[in-house]
Image (tube, one colour):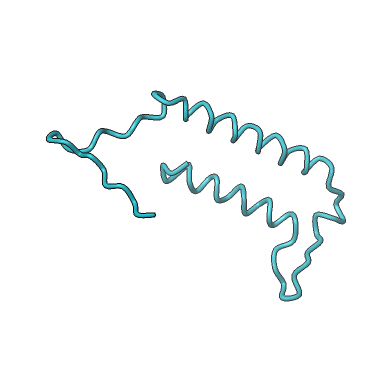
Amino acid sequence: MTPRARNTGAAGPAPAPTMTDTGLLAQLLDAWAINNRINLVLLDHISDEAMSATLSKRGGRDVSRQFAHIHMIRVSRLENGRG
């Protein structure tokens, strides 16, 4: 299959829909809330011993550091306007 060419017409390409036009913002916020709720449940149910567990043979992140990494990526994206 060959990709279809976009019909840009005389006025150029149509503007991309905004998040509010398509309900995408609401869907993203719902997905984030679900993911956050699952992460909080996981944190509540992981024992202290399990938080220090890792499968890495080379000194990779343990479970607590994985959660810290997720948090820091979220913070970074929010601070940089990419979240």
